[in-house]
Image (cartoon, rainbow, N blue to C red):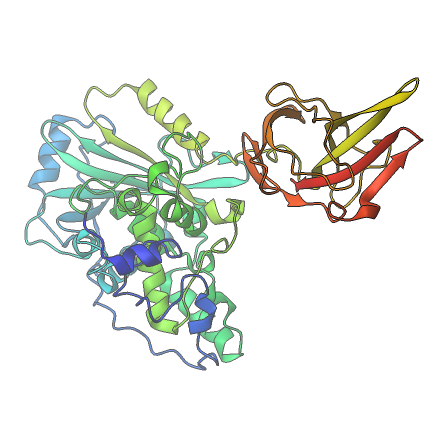
Length: 495
């Protein structure tokens, strides 16, 4: 898929936003607040909204369809023979499971969500490729059915994972003689506002001078956005097929679901499996793109994920609650155990990753390198043995003249010898030239210096620039430990 440079420049901040949606010279991805209106508008000019194509409701699927995971031949034949209605989402007719168990309010919410999803896709149908255009498109001929239900056929609606609840589950039946998409929605979906409800609340608060909800992408989640996510999985919409992606393709956790994690997927380095390519096959990237573009066009405020400036990947559980279990393609020979395994894998992906331990050496500690000299008396003459000594200490805390430290003294495990020539001058020490292998807090580190500067410390997960100790070039930087030992700090490396 081709993405223009403006898209690529904004993708790190946005939820897969394109340059023509939000021009690069209009919104700075490092500082989107700068382009916000100076004063919140007291009234919003509502965007043009397509006429509701679903105002007449949905018909029921044939009564011969009783098992949607393993439909009978009669069911498939009856579905295909059923007179057509509105063929939305590029050829799909929405129908109720004949045993859907949705009450009147829930049926109304389903119909509004479908209309809202169509409106969101319609408003973004040229961004960033043809997938949203297909999501907003209609067809003169039905090519498949979209079956809707409130009946918890698999008893999955009660599943929770680390404070997050299932908002629904879906699958594509792709058999020899028929193809349809089946969706069950659960309580979190029916507890979510529709698109117009969100707009009314934002307008009310903006009239009071508070634009916060217009700025927060996560707050703008609606049933239409949730429904559009499901429609992006349709084979009639996604080219190539749109799935649910992990932020890290090698990690079973961290689905790119919700604006924060969609943002993390988009800004992830290409060589680590991120960027536009994988964002373009992630359903929630499209759903949040369309949602954010709609609210940006409506309010003038750029909706941002809460972590767009943060360096961590923490996400509030509330942001991901209402996630859907998409089982992918189901065929005649798909075993129940396979479906269960898919469910377990999806649920595991919504677990909250354990906080990574801080890379060692620990922040707040420092490596101190000093020249020490020992005077050895030999009767009528004396010799001086000078060496490089290595210590850990707290940042900003000097090592004492006799090596006192709140850390530890380190003995190099190889590399350059710590011994210095007899001509070494403790009053005017050189740089600690060489390569010294050090075990620091269990990590195999190496201090390297070419003798012309303060050098660098290399550890497995950190590379640290070292600095000249303030006492290196001063005569009073020489400290005494008794009558025979002198100590002169030369370099420090703050972890």
